[in-house]
Image (cartoon, rainbow, N blue to C red):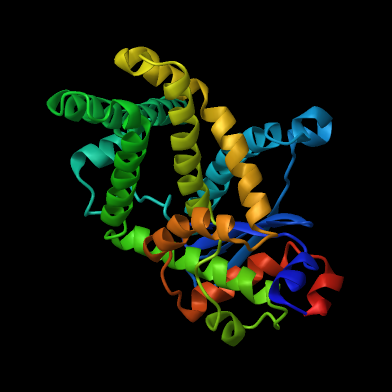
Length: 325
């Protein structure tokens, strides 16, 4: 039996690296496993509700990708907060001598409601920064370069915007990967991929078997981001050619790109699903940038991290499927 045939006979499992832990999602729902401060592994099943189960039309191609993207963002954030609490990251002792006077005052005087407001403000600022980096900056940069070259880029603006967007994204990931905490999260990301590969290859779910697997997986969210960028270039180029002069109005052009984001996300989702079941030249070309990028977003995990990944994985697959290994 080939590897592709073997994968098709397995249940579909996906995951997400967390703070000192991993979330896995499969037929048995989702589970969050976290390495606690005392060294034990805390595993908790997390209920998962999909809108498509209630509204069938949300499960249609393209639409399901948009819905899935939004649900994944919300659910992923919820799991991230769970891992922060279980790993001890949220345990702040106001009496700690290392705390500044400002830290102690904030701990004593800021209540949960105010913290919720601060979190909301931080989220808005974060989205604003993302908009500036990935929409405004590429558009303005290409417009400026085009003016310097007497319009040489006019017919290729969408392409060069996509290239600049990719460069910004790669530079951002490269910089944050230097942070100690982020590097550990990327190691858990590697453990997640290697565990899923171990299962898909039909091997026993053991630490030793997991260690032998690749940490680069084609269905990774990193690949999804690159597919989004590539498809956005294709669609944006088509719109730019169809509606000539649209690029000249910066505000209108950015508004158009924001409006077509749901469509791009939906198409990208369908491609990722297709890529998980097929292995042809088109899939390999479009998936390649994401796989290369995983050299930054995944790191080789240690045994303790693989143990966490295995705990989460075993909690979300049926017993009969565990025996298949």
